[in-house]
Image 1: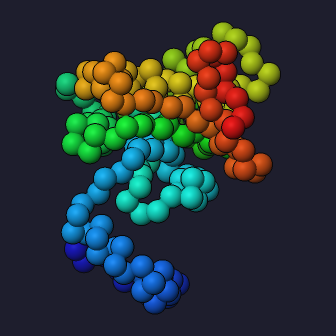
Image 2: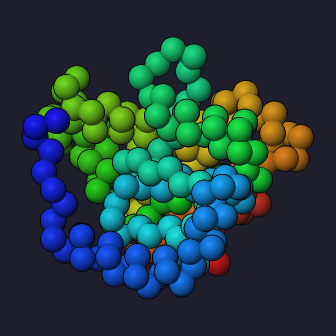
Length: 215
């Protein structure tokens, strides 16, 4: 691939620093991970946003979480034939092969994908409505959430839509037959979270009150 370039110097330096410290101090653990394979406790579906650092939020070690990231932490509905197989494949592998006990959908504040969805659905981002826009087609998954927020006349529609991205994903996840079977058998539980980046807060969806409550 002639267009590929060497890593930037700062990334190379950080790698060597990691190899000399973290890896060197825990090399036996890394070798064990390599030889015994992964046995993650949970799958976390989060946004690609660089400010959302899943392992830091939960203080997790390598091998503990099976992490999938995409724009706006969305899960598409189950489709045997469709265009959204990357996230669907990750969920299938986590549930069927890794047999994780938990799936967490983690939304966040100031989500650019959610903002784009709001702009698109309100008619202010025609470029996202183009069939050639991958982001626009992906954010169509969240359109039902936009309609629900619009109907409720929320005082903070953007934050409400960020949380809808979590709820829509949880709803869509239950359309996967293998997810529903695992949930109904008690082998799997699904969880909806939203984090406020500025405040460091974590909110959990509570179906009893149909709202997100701070942890």
